Image 1 (cartoon, helix red, strand yellow):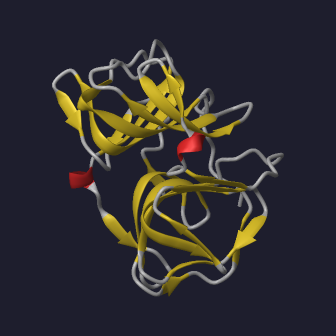
Image 2 (cartoon, one colour):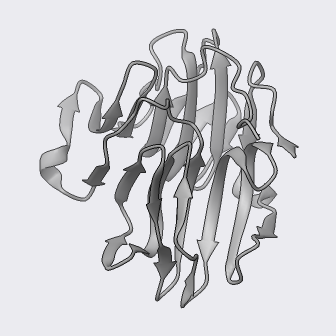
Image 3 (cartoon, one colour):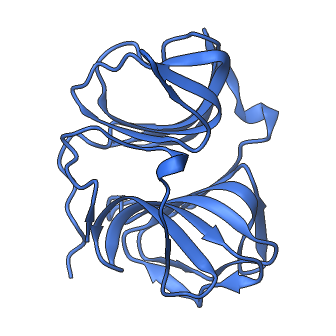
Amino acid sequence: MLVNSDFSRRAIVTPDEYRWVASPQGGVERVMLDRLGDEKARATSIVRYAKASHFPPHMHPGGEEVLVLSGTFSEGERDYPAGWYLRNPPRSSHRPSSEDGTTIFVKLWQMPASESEFVRVNTHDPSRWTRQRDREVCPLFSGADEQVALERVAASARIFAGRVDGAEMLVLDGELREEDQIYRRGSWIRLPAGEDPAFIAGTSGVTIYLKTGHLRTQPVPPAC
């Protein structure tokens, strides 16, 4: 299965374009934002768990990245309310579930095999945030091939200073603007390497998930 699979081109999915697709596990649905592969896939998705839904224990050979958007996401006995960022390295395993329901942003099979660190960040912790000129930044992860952060950008401030080595944004609050286009909460935008984007924060500012540096080369699907 291929969804937004040409990483040399811009891809955008707004909430009014969401198409919820049932997963093989009952009570779990997903919006496929980009995907290379079938059930074993390099994938970026919005995933929604109904109340009292769960997956059996399983491994993620290519790693898994999660940002909890609403509700409470659980791994075994650990609960992660909205605002938590999780990073489970390649070959790690877990038993995900949600007693009360949750919506999460998920990236699968997008980590180098050498990555071994488990990351847990509560983005509601004020000590995680620092002021940088026209924005506040909450770093989530920094590696050789990618940088991940949440950013609260002041009204009308430009998001990027120049060309990007690939970038991916999810609007978490407020509005993102580009010329006459407005992207509201839930909008997902992927930009190819080499683009010089003109995005600015809306009149009340914007909070975004931002990943950069990870699209210098064309991603490939997982080996079967």
